[in-house]
Every structure is written in structure tokens, then in C-alpha cells.
Length: 397
Image 1: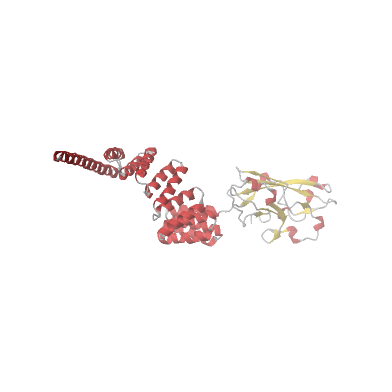
Image 2: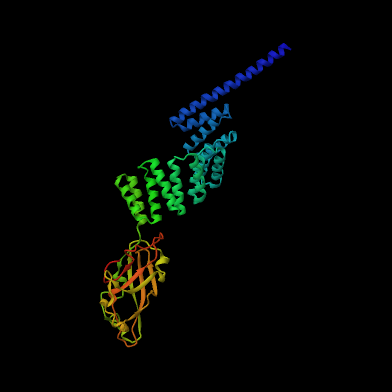
């Protein structure tokens, strides 16, 4: 019996020694792999990590390093497999769930990515990085409301993290909750510093949403004054965002109306056919825009209006003498047709002028005011300082 016990002890001792040796080799190969990683020799690192795992297939660290090496080598599928193996050994690794989700995002597999982000949030409820990263995923997929829920979770765990404030501000902006966005973005800037130019840019968009032009201008000035190329680029983006389309003027080649003629012009001076009592004639006036306009908006005749001038800048129709109103030529306050050429940014307005029954109507072509109240291709409304035009003024107003 004693000899049997002794033999058994020797066997277990040999097994223990073997396990210890395998563990030692695995540890050595892991250390070697880490050195290769630090030297950016990812091919050798992957080889060493695979060797380490052959001796210790239950090392989550080795699988995680192997995934990182594969990512550096552009082998995303192999990285996914390594991360999965690690998580099979320990599913509570919130950061590894996030890493795996990020690889799925790179592979455009949003379904699997979201599963992993959710798993990360559940794996460690004390880790702010998991809901924060999941929130970014949701925000990038136009799910701002859900993103806010995740960012709020993250903020409760890390209340002084400016990145989370910035993310919340961005999400509020997407929802049109601009006042809340301003609050969060100001916190982000206070916590991340005055050189957090992305925060100032997002803050500028919140001010645009609020219609706070003064604050937008101040933000643009601040970014420009830094003389930092990134900040200046953000300023230019904000300037483009607040730029509203304008009417620049008229184009003679596309205009048949003799707008140079002034007060009390006999209507038949515009076209001899109007010498006939109760006759009508179509005329065109072509406008030049400074921006690419929304085609359907420009061609919508209800977005245009035609009226008699009645102000200092635009002049007073017939020089303000209205005693001959019964002799005025008539015209519709809305055009008959509008066409638009997106290559030249020009709109041609067609409208009708009518002679009276006596054949003695007059008109003041220079003081017919044309106004456009539509939008450009980006949905921006007209600049109210340049959405009207008449020949008397000579410029849009």
C-alpha cells in the first residue's frame, strides 16, 4: 500500500510540475508578445500570443492582446474571433465587449455591435465608458433620444467628465433641445478647457438653433481669434451654417420687362401689343441668387410676390402720386410661372401685365417689387436683407 501511495504522489507531482512548466512557458511567451507589441512588430506578437495560448488556453489577457495585434494587422475577422474567445472565458469584461462592438462597427455590422454595447452596459454597471460608448453608437445612428438615456447613465457615474457633457450637448442639439444643449456644452468647455474647439463649434450650432445671432457671432470671433487652424475651420463651418441665401440682382439677358422705364409710363411702351384695350402680355424678369436653391421652392409661384414699391429704399410707386390709380395697368401679385436653372443659380419669373379697357393705362416698371420667401437647397430661409428687389433700388433689400 505504501508503495502505491508513493507512486501516486510522484504522478501528481509530475502533473503539477508539468502544469507549472506550461504556465511558466505561457507567461514567458505572453511577456515576449507584449514586447513585440511595444516594438510594433504585430506579426511576431501574434505568433507569440498563439504560442502562449497553446500552453494556457484560458488566458483572457492573451486573447485580448491577440485581438489587438490582429486589429493592427487589419485582420478584423480574426480579432473578432479572439475577442469572442476571451468573452467565453469571462463575459464580465465590459471593456472587451466595447472593443468587440467597435470592430463590428468597423465591419458595418451594427446589429452585432449593438448586442455587444448592451452586453458591456450590463456587464459592469459601475463603468461609465460602456453607456458612454453605447450612447455614441446610438447618436451616430440617429437615435438621439436613446443616446441621451445612455449619456445620462454615464454622467451619473462620472459627473465631472467633459466628454460626456459634450456628447449630451450634441444629442440635445440633434433633438432641437437647444437650451439644454447650451447648458451641457458650457459644462464641457469649462471642464475640458478653452482649447476645446469642437465644444465651441457645437455650442455655436446650439445658438443658431436658438436664433441667438449675437452669441453665434461671438463664438465665431473667439474661434477665429485663436489663430488655430482647427478652430478657424470650425468658425468657417459656423459661418456657412448662418449664411442665408440672397438675391444678388437681375440678369438682363433673361429679362424682357423694361425696368429702366419710370413713373407713369404708358403700358404700351413695354410692348406695342398692349396698345389694344383690355389686352395682356407676359413679361419675364430673371434673378440671380448667390446660393444653390431648392428647385421646388423656387418654382413654387406662391413663394413669390409682386407689389408696388412703398418705401424710401425701394422708392414710391409713381413717385408717390396715386391720383391716376384708375389708369394703372394691372398685374397679378403672384407670377404665372417660375423656372430655375441650378447650374447658373438663376430664376426666371414670368408674369402678366394688362391694359385697361380704355387703352390708356400707365405703369412704373422701375418700382415693381419682387420678393422671394422660399428656401435654398439646405432648407435655409432667405436673408431678409436681400429677399426683395426693384430696379429703382438697383440692389436687393
